[in-house]
Image (cartoon, rainbow, N blue to C red; front, side):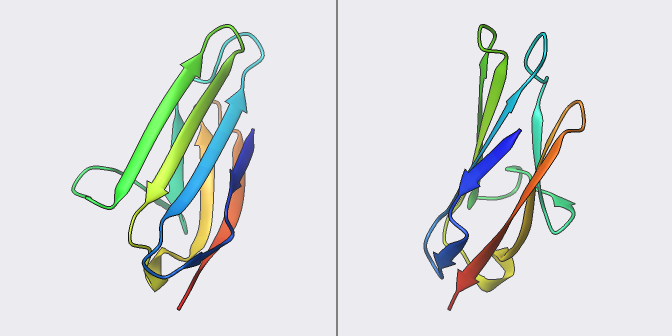
Length: 96
C-alpha cells in the first residue's frame, strides 16, 4: 500500500492524494480515507471527491481523494486503509 500527493497546499487550492494497494490473490475490496481519525465521506459534502479504480489483472485498487478549496482545518494526518486493514498515512499542511 502506498500514498502519494502534496504535503503542502496553499489555502483555497486543492488537496490531491492517491492511495494504491495491491492484494496477494485479488485486489482489496475497498479503501477508506480518514483525516485525523475521522472517516471522510462524499455524502453531504461538495468539496470532497473520492474515486476508486480496481484492476483484477494487476490485483490493485487505486483511490483518489480530492478536497477542493482547502482550508486550515483540512490540515492533518490523512490515512488510507484497505478492507484487509493495511494502513498508510501522510501529513498534509494547508498554508495560509
